[in-house]
Length: 84
Image (tube, rainbow, N blue to C red; front, side, top):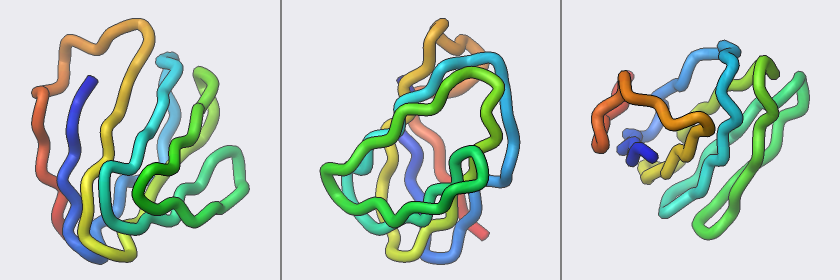
């Protein structure tokens, strides 16, 4: 699990990977793009993403995402800051 701090306007670029991923919005507002479908997420919302599905996120209001991966990712720090 990693905690990502986003400033308003920051972008988690569109990408895919072999991990399953669960995003939980701790705070803020985000536009999440998953498999070509965009959805607004706010505090308390979550989205599950299957492996190899294209995903991305744009921060609309500064906030924090918790990203949970399976299998566990060893290549990411526990806390990250994402600014644009």
